[in-house]
Length: 316
View (cartoon, rainbow, N blue to C red):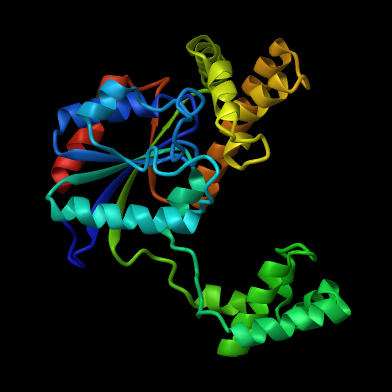
């Protein structure tokens, strides 16, 4: 079932938005009845946001077990660390119940952070943080940035001069360990100690993906995306929230607030989603190794499903 190190097998199905991941994952789950799907979508975590996030419909959710969908309200804070913690706990529970974990989605940061865990470093030094806070008030954040630059120039190349939180953390880590954040990250093995990932990716020619995106946006409008955003606003979820900055929600909010006309809002959703799909593919190719890619232009969908289910069955 698992390799010699007794890591837990986890299967991943990833790809850009509009590629058809949800449909294929559902067909895989119907072939292998003890699969449970873990969503790796940074928008599907929000309750009440269904149409714009393209969640599986209620009938599917009632018959095939899905996780990490509808877990927080739109005004709650959430980040990749919380996702990885919750997803890891879910996988352990799924394994304990002798089920199979299939992670499905397009949020590259979620996947890469599960596969190569983020470096966390030591705990907090509240006394030192208070000292740095006093220094900032007297000499400004630039003073701390220059201090960090002298210690860890590689770190300051990657952060903004005004990012006080990250500057403080890097100085804190150096003070507590005697090592820079950069050196500690390099020393970290960056290998997940608990899970053995089998990664499958879907892609096809860009024009086909873009066409699918355009059609999907039109379908979302027909299903009531505008009405969904109006409902969220009536519930008190304002447009500045992180959740309401998601694709579709941001543009429709601008339409509702008379910043766009309807045609412009729809055009912007399509264009911004196409750009997002392009960025997703760049992330997958640059940040995630050992993906078994399937080209939907060259391989029949049923054949892809058969190959993935075969690999899952073989591993178990």
